[in-house]
Image (tube, rainbow, N blue to C red; front, side, top):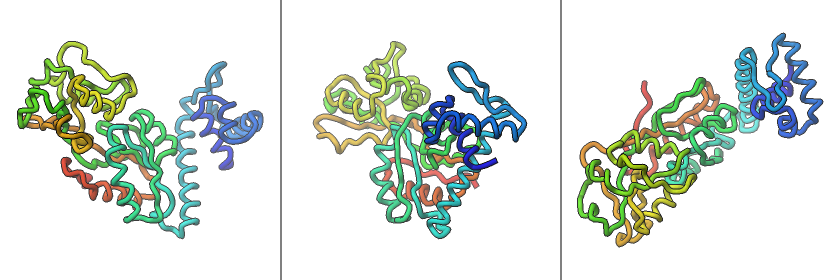
Amino acid sequence: MTLTELRYVVAVARERHFGRAAEKCFVSQPTLSVAVRKLEAELGITLFERGTQQIYVTAAGQPVIAQAQRILEEVRHLARLAESGSDPLSGPLRVGAIHTVGPYLFPELIPRMNQKAPRMPLVVEEGYTAELRERLRRGELDAAIIALPFRDAGVTVVPLYREPFVVLLPASHPLAAKQAIGRGALANENVLLLGPGHCFREQVVEACPGCVSNREPHYAVEGSSLETIRHMVASGLGITIVPCTAAGADKYSRRLLSVRRFAGRAPARTIALASRTGFPRSEALHALRDAVHQCNLTCVSLLEPAS
């Protein structure tokens, strides 16, 4: 059993295809196939169900693949330790965030991390929750900033902050005259939401069902961002509900947009940090969490991990 064989089986499990896995590993398909069969013979089990169109991991192979991923992660960590003189705050930290967090957190988080850990640059990306979950599983991300609930075997989730939702509306809208807006007041409004695939859309509907009328709401085109919806609101096409950190009233003249809180207890979401259980650079994750807490997120309530 070799590390090369482990890399090959992990690549096949990820790509679900021997040819694509070979390309990712920069070897020929016969070379990869022989190595996989050699490992299967050594282990005495079949790792993959080989179909005509796609490859599937067998039930016996699933724990083997998971353990192989952990071994390869530990090997990468060993190499990083050797390079950095055993400093867990040295070397890149790969962090993903959902689309409704990244644009509003990263601009302040990155310089704060540069101050706290100048030898540990953040490699950041944005994605849907499902994409980040899969990249975290495969070891392509070290951590992901997501919204709860988020459950996955082998993943540890630490809460970061609780973020209330606010109403974003044209400054000329009648509801802008109110200091706070009741949920029921939105039932007959054209509430613009993100398209299917964005978890924030489901969070709004679940946390504030009275905010959306029984008729089908008007969605922005699928894949739109909160920034696109902000432009639509400024154009007078409707109103929307956004996380408070994304309200961004300063980006437009007050003649165009108004931000109003909800009356009573506002709907909210909890943002958390997810990482693989046993991730060896725990000090890096602690530094990341502390840096998030030091960001100027004045509208949120910071949360500490359960002791």
